[in-house]
Amino acid sequence: MSTEKSPGILYKILRLFTVIHPDEIPTVLLLSLNVFLLLASYYILKPIREALILAGKGAEIKTYLSGAIAILFIFVVKIFSSIASRVPRQKLIVWVTLFFISNLVIFYMLSLSEISLGTIGIIFYVWIGIFNLMIVAQFWGFANDLYTEEAGKRLFPIIMFGANFGALCGPKINLWLMRSLGLYRLMLLAGGILGICILLTLIIHKRDIKKPENTGTKKSVRNESEKKEQEKPLKKGGSFRLVFKSKYLLYIAFLVLLLNFVNTNGEYVLGKVIIHDATRALEMGTAGGLDKPELISKLYANFFFIVNLIAVIFQLFLMSRIFKWFGVRGALFILPFIALGGYFFVAFGATLIIVRWAKTMENSTDYSVMNATRHALFLITSREAKYKAKAAIHTFFSRAGDVSSALFVFVVTTFFAVNIKNIENVAIFNIALILIWIILCILIARQHKKLSAQQAQQ
Image (cartoon, rainbow, N blue to C red):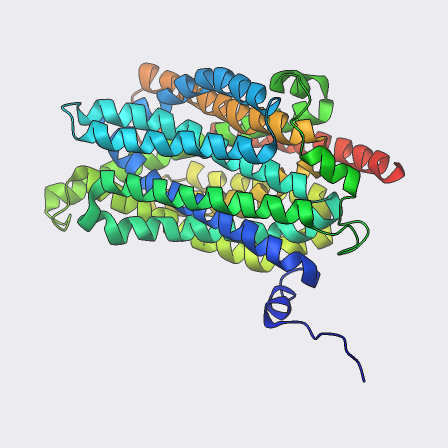
């Protein structure tokens, strides 16, 4: 009679979406819960960010602030890199998260003062531009540190599902609680959720260190010497130096820059449309008793909900199969071709419906397929690259793309009258950028193939 334990219900469910081993389930679920809470907290805050900045200053100022964020990231990344070379990964994550929690308390206190809506909107927009990239970059650096390339390609789609589901729930939480709590108490709620994330990170770290070496498959588990290395601070060296020393990392950096250039151009178009829609609703008396900031927050919350609902569906049913059928290299090309099609239609008629659905499909694919792919690109890199270079790429270079968009918007709004025709021209400009983006994908795919072959020989 066989004494082998039959697989549990969780194993049977997860097997529907990816290849997973029973011993991998606890850590995968903890990571999924962790990133679920991280993204839920961010998406509780994101509609607040849009409401404060758009109601207080407008779409142009929102775009220009990306330049300030990019400059700040030069210093933020250097500080992060310095701390990462002095403390183990779990302390690094705890300290950074506690810092952001304390900031949310400060914002709540500012709301009780005489500071104007526009001033708070600017400060909060800059802050959240740093928060969302740093908090997510360090989580995925941690996840990359836990898994080998083989395991990461199998398990990242499940973890990304947690991220997408958190992004789906966050806007709904904002909608449900906005009337009872208001914009600023929702910030405190997000801070409390981040506190739970700290506890989950410590639990996952302890599980990883204590995990026996003979669990899972040979390819998916790190050996004891590798685990001891994970307990140590990272080697000294700057984040930007790591990026510029490697063709592979540099190509990824420029990919992220271009991706955000295209995306932020699209966000500018969407912001103009939403402001127009909110203003019209107030004039016609169809705002449902909401003021302009609350109405903009509601419109964005609904938009984010639809985007993330589609992203969850993509992540759950397509992502693991895309990695299995096309690999990480093939997955690189999906978003640029979807964005190319979307902006093609916008270029021929920038109506509200076309802009909204073009951005919905672009953002949904970005948050699911492209997000998982960008993180998986680092599975074949060193620990220093996973934390330091990744932080630089997904913060500074990401915001550099936003700055490029800000300069472009400045030219459009300064030298041309802003109208629907200009919005259609933004779409045409994006099409040209996407063609360059596709060339970068080809270069990254070649470098990834080369580095994977080298790693397999070691």
